[in-house]
Length: 272
Image (cartoon, rainbow, N blue to C red; front, side, top):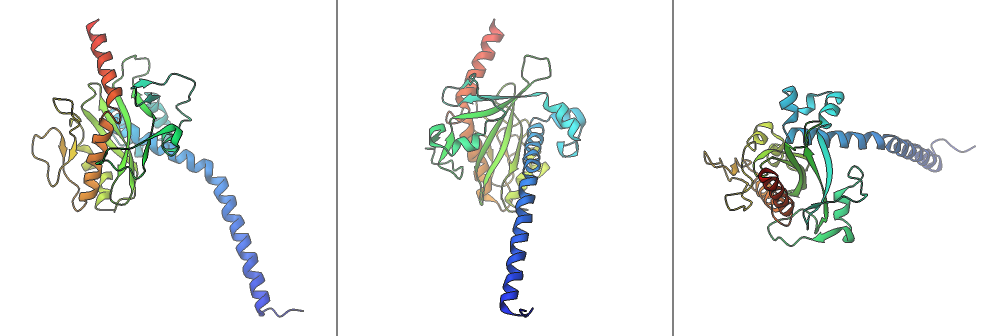
């Protein structure tokens, strides 16, 4: 009979424990995967609603304080659509916006293009050809109130993923939120601070000549500056990253052509 304190017995017990623990972890990971994906989707929906100001507008509080039923009710205002960024046209073939993942598309050569803007660093070398955008309309209305545009770019430590909402004039910012980043808490992580995010409401994305001009100022933004918000204290690189990602996605390399097309449609509708 083998000794219980022998090396072989010890190794056997350790091996069995490792196998059992790995099986438990694997089963838990598989079992929780659907729940994790649902939570990710819910978090993105909350950020879209906050960027558009719908949560405060309808319930007077951030989406993090809403029930799932209230979020589902508000998200009926949101229409998911796909846009070809080169042509600025909506994609009307059989692609399903709900199933489309633009981040995955940006990682595949056939569904992405090389990024050439030297000021913009998204943390990857390519960006998707087709983007998912969100139009906000009251149920039953044909006129959109806002457009919510996914944006992303490199901060200090991470790629920051978020949403920028524009009002119906397509130049006034309604809100900016980030749903994923790895910036330093208390420094670059202040992109999540409600007081800092609130500064974006009413700021202008473009100047009078249509040039993307929104920026995070170094220090306190000058009073009356229609483009700038206060810098993030001690987080110069994160601040610069936010400026660069907003200007890139507002340019013709991003949503610029699409937004120009929408303005032309609005002008033609108003003139008819």
